[in-house]
Length: 233
Image (tube, rainbow, N blue to C red; front, side, top):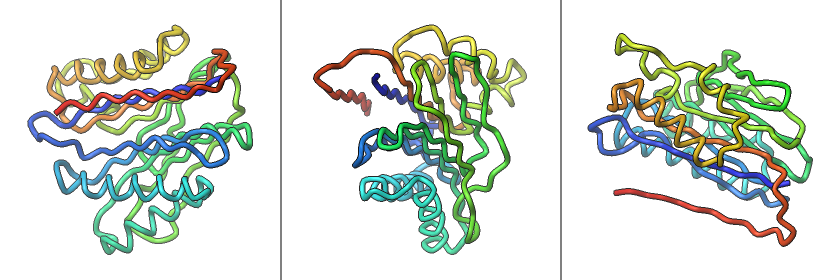
């Protein structure tokens, strides 16, 4: 089997910088985690907050911390540094090869979409953002590490797309219909982001991130690992 990751993001129209941050981290005992953080507000201030949290989470993962502990520490970290005056949302998608499982950790109002051979659904239980008080717990879901599983994490700029334009709003059913198409993971991330941007009339009303993690049957006898990054400026 092979774990594949695709990420696509864009900043709010005319702001020049995205307040959302994403980190893809290799786990020390095998596997990969995607950390998605949406900082409060927009622009450079939001970016400083989200980048600080995302890199802190990445460092903890690299040190071998468990996902639940990582989520609690980044909450305490933001609370301590911003005195409870700044919040952020955080989502973590993990393929843990050591324990042969998938983990979804949420301190976010944005659902995580799950696609599997039996169908598709979303995790959208209410959960608090990080940074506003101590002792905030993440919502954590464990899944089996099986082929044809797709995890999609987004920020609220995606799920709120089209909400204020008077036209169609973001549809989870639209995403569900594309999960079993067999398209490359990066192409799926790009398509979902493009769909959200189109709902906002081509001018994103908020920062947007789409991160996709899939488990595939693709044989890779040599264990070759690849990463590709596109960074326009």
